[in-house]
Image (cartoon, one colour):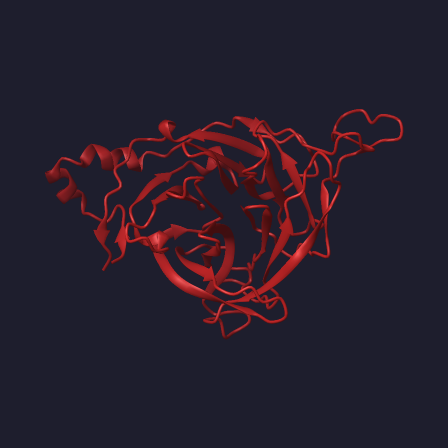
Length: 328
C-alpha cells in the first residue's frame, strides 16, 4: 500500500486537532550556512557522501563540464589533500616547488554529467546519470575504490556499469522522466531517484513526481536494466539522496523541500511509499541545493552549487507530523 504525507483535507485535520501541525509544515524552512567550501576548483558541487571509515571526511564532486575528479573535504569546508606531496591548499601562497591542489583525478572515467555519489564498504559510486534533455544513451555508474586522501593523489575506475531505463523508447523522450540526480545504497544494492521535467528542449521546468529504480545486475560489457520499484507523486525535482548510517531514514532533497522517509515497515525497499516528513524550504536561503549526506544518525550535511554547507541537526527542524494516508 502506498502512503503520502499532507493529503488529508485541512477541514478534517482541524477537526482532529492537527491544524497547528499543518501550519507548521507550511512554514518555509530557512537554515543559514554553517561553512563554505574554500577550494575554488569545487565550483559546482553536485554530490557529497561521508566516508564511514575516516574521521570528518566527505567525498564531493562537480557537476557536468568538469574533468573526471573527486575531492575530499571536512564538514567545515576545508580540503583534505595528500601529506608530504608537491601540493598545497588552494588559495594558499604556493611554496616553492609546490602546486595548488586540484583534486583527485579519476582515471579511465569521463564526467558527462555526474550528479551524485554514494559509498558502500570501501567503494565509491559516481552517478553519471544526469540527463537534462532525456536524450542520453550513455548513462552509467562508475565504481572506484575509496582511496586514502592523505596518501594518494589519484583514483581509477574499477567498473563502469552502463544503465538504461527499460521504459524509455524515445531519444529524446517525449515524457521527460529519465533524469536522475540521486543515488544511494541499501542492502548492497544501488538505487536511483528520478527528476521529472516538463516541456522544452532541456526540460527546465520541473514536474512533481519521482520514480525509484534499483540496479539488480552489474554488467560491464552490456547495459544493465534499471528496475522501477516505487514512485512518489509530490517530490519536485529530486537533486540528491542518502541513507542514514543506521539504515532507518532516507533523506531526499528536491527543488523546494527536504524529505525524510522512514524505513519501510514490511522490510522491503519501497522507500517512497512509507511514512515521510516534509520540510519546504526557502530557495532564497538554500539557493541551488544539490547534495545531501549524513554526519551521523541525527545530523545532516547539505551542500549547494554555490559551495555553501549546511549542518542540520534533526532536532533543529520544524516540528511536523508524519501523517500517512492511502494514495488514490
